[in-house]
Image 1: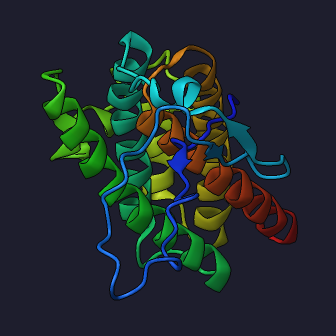
Image 2: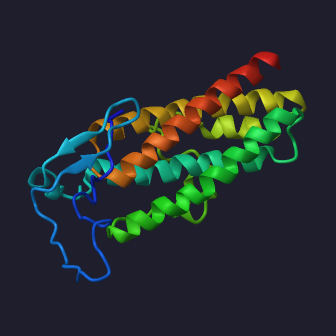
Image 3: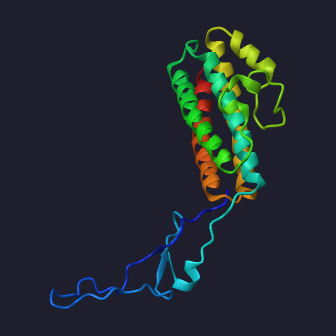
Length: 222
């Protein structure tokens, strides 16, 4: 995953804020392009002091095709996770499995809306699954090349499973589904250019890595 830095913040240095008296008119001080600038380091790294001229010109990063593809594909990917959660709602027998299934469904719905909003702002196509997760994701006919996607046969099996088999099959499919999402996030980290999309990919990677570990623990117990 690529490491990302936030934009540098100019420090209010040498402004003499405490030196002004009531009988001395204050004179506005223009910020010099050579004023020192502190750029925060990434976690575990020290801050860096830059000259004003080297820090002022920080161009905003524009998106590229990899960012667009990631958002479009992740909407579809998320939509299948939502469908899987809907299929097992009220049928799971284990309390912890019910809890994580509910969290995954509730987390991914708003993420889909956010990704759709970004695509619209870029003038890019928004997958139909953004508003109706069952379109495409449930049939399994499309997006077979997308990592971790369950097939129609697997979804049908999940829909007809009974008892603890529902919990076990859900975990098996969702672990594979999450692992596919991690691959997509790593590809974005290597090829994407938009900072906000990159941050979303990082967040998804962290969240789903943790959930994979939790689901594997549950699966070993069932």
